[in-house]
Image (tube, rainbow, N blue to C red; front, side, top):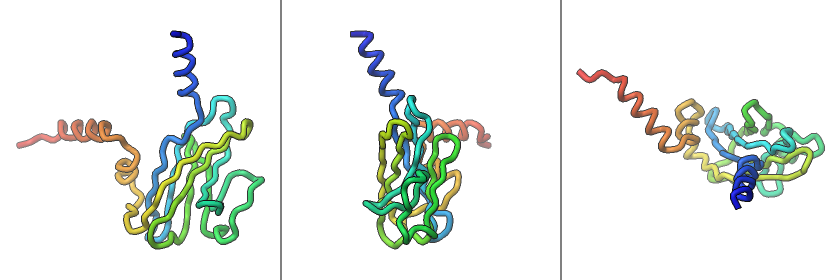
Length: 154
C-alpha cells in the first residue's frame, strides 16, 4: 500500500497541468495574459494556444491556422519558466472568455484553463498587479510582515 501511495503522489507531481492564468492591461485597450504550466515529464516540448470557443487567437503549433480577424490583433509566444503569453490588441468592452491550451508535442495530451476578463476591471501591468493576481494570501502576508519589520517607528 505504501508503494502505491508513493507512486500515485509521484504521478500527480509530474503530470502536465496549467498552474495559473494571470492577466493585465499593457495599454488601455491591450491585454497581456500569462499562462504558467507544468510541462509533462515525458515530453517537455509543448505547443500553446489561446482560444475563445472555436476561434483561435494564436498558437505556437505550426500545423494550426490562426482565425483571420485575429492575425493582426493577437500574438502567442513561449517564454522561459514555462510561460505562454498572449498579447491581444483592442480588447472588446464587457466580459470575454480566454482559454489557454497546452498540448504535449509527443503525447498530444491537452490541458486547458479558462478565465473571464472584464475590460473595465483590468489592472495595468506592473509587478504589484502581477503579485496580487498570482500570489497566494500567505506569501503576501509574509512579505508584508517582513516589510513592517524594516520600518523604524519613531
